[in-house]
Image 1 (cartoon, protein in one colour):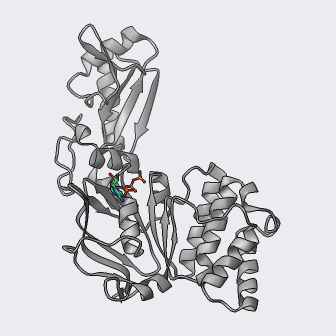
Image 2 (cartoon, rainbow, N blue to C red):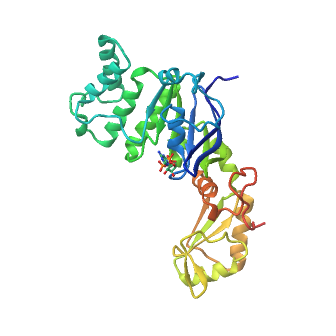
Image 3 (cartoon, helix red, strand yellow):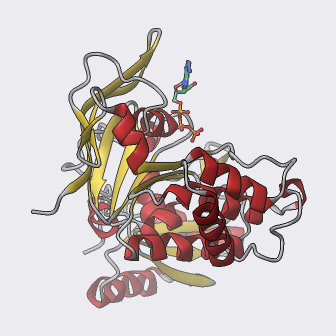
Length: 342
Ligand SMILES: Nc1ncnc2c1ncn2[C@@H]1O[C@H](COP(=O)(O)OP(=O)(O)OP(=O)(O)O)[C@@H](O)[C@H]1O
């Protein structure tokens, strides 16, 4: 059996009357990436803070082991095994990138020589050698994030908590960060990642948990989560409002319910984008059946696209009760489209 880097049972945390974490279980095997997804305020940072010893869990919580150490009885050993990069950077803008690194080396009690060697190596690895002598306040957002992670790695932690590490980064910097994370994992590091970017979780995580209302609504690989939500559909777009109205009424029984944000005119819901969605699993057989139906109804869309479920669908379905007829926290009872074309 693979050893677990993180094992938390019945993690609970309340602030006053507000229950933020309602007894969640988290297990992360060594050398893997685990991503905790959830809407704003779901409790992701709270989970990171507890697991990294920055906040205490409620006494009713179960046992928490990090790197094999009991968090309640040996927080010091936990701290020595982990690195944390929070939403608010630990970088001091008044000193240079190199000085920030050397400060971390001092905090980890590395001998001077060793500290200089590690700092230089990490600055090189994170492409910061050229900027090393500049004050960190002059760095771009992406450079600051890289420096932040480089500082986290000074103590060679085996487990890293990355709390929204790419928030605010441009696409290129985000991809660079993903590459760095992949390299860390290849080197055997375990990564606990919180993110609001579903694509990021999809790209990096071995397992993903969706946190909502204080509970894990679903957990699995990206593929397993996508299978929970049968929201594949064919999208028809029209440029002519009359053609759209005709199609909407001809296909009334088979189109998916209108998403939020639709205007109502004269009692009928109007999609401002003039589009209709027909549930479909995307197979050739189903597509043919849809095309036959359009043909016989005399409907000609200006554009037809096939949409397969992605993590966005999972996220919206599990974290927005207004979009989900089923209760959350019941991942084994996925949403069924109202009707399917057969
Ligand atoms: N120290 C605190 N005192 C009181 N309430 C708190 C405290 N820390 C967090 N909370 C509340 O707990 C809830 C969860 O916050 P948390 O920061 O963990 O969410 P999050 O999922 O990380 O959100 P985001 O994606 O916006 O960063 C929020 O309602 C927040 O207001």
